[in-house]
Image 1 (cartoon, rainbow, N blue to C red):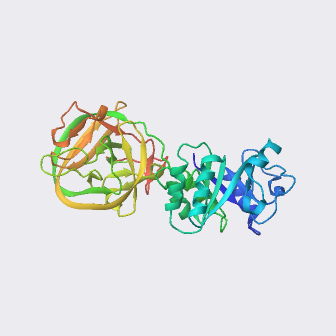
Image 2: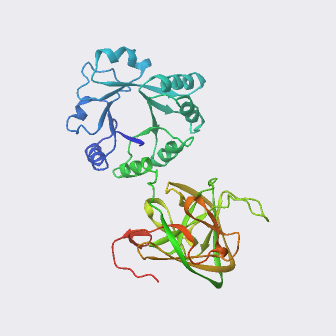
Image 3: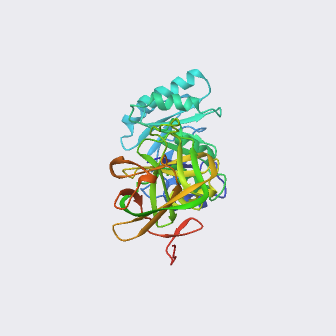
Length: 368
């Protein structure tokens, strides 16, 4: 789990409100330069003392973590730890050049906590530190200037920083920071659907979704005509006789179809565009958000696939009517859509709630 630390050291009249947000959104840590700021905070939060421009106090009060800047404080975590057995210590490093980058790498390899501030906007130095800390047991916390930078930091080198420290510019930004930290998507419970009928339905517009990511052989996106039932459409990672593989692409279906994005929100295929997010899903239900690079909408012959779930729910998917357009079955079986017949089994997903402008909602809704 990624960690969110709220820096309240230089907040003025908004400090109390932001501390309340910290409790409401259950951030992992609050950073202050005065132990008195921790007096009313519950034990569920890490109370991080970081007197960056001040001397270390003699009494750390309720602090659970103390961040030390050896240059300013004249001491190190290793020297302080034996004197304060109830406190964890970390090291602050500001990365401005090659020597301080090496200092950050050493901290990442040896310290329990490393708080890193990168002066330049490039993320290459952070990549280097993350790589240096690959087998280390400590945690990297990186300073972010705003929520957008926090999202980038959490994704650097695929692993991302273990946490982000951010000083909110306004009340409300805590929610954005916490959302950025929770970018990982939960697994889905896929079900086996039995094909009951296929039919050629004539011409229409279908969408190919080209992502900015190489998709795996057992991975695609969930697509369906109705919000309560979708079929797993495979990416073009498997060889075809007449064209090269395109591992970033899913020939996903007719433009009216739903697919899933963050928080199981649905999007029409026709709504997707460069920069949109869609949920990639593999045959075991593992998920990840991927970025759409392009959507190609073209007129093609279409085929309709009707399937039924074990509980009797009906599922429909309309695809391009062509042999090379495929879906996934149990065990990662790759099934050509035009060869599906009654009795065949495909993998799908059955959302439990209806949708209003894409959001899950518990209300009556009839789709047919």
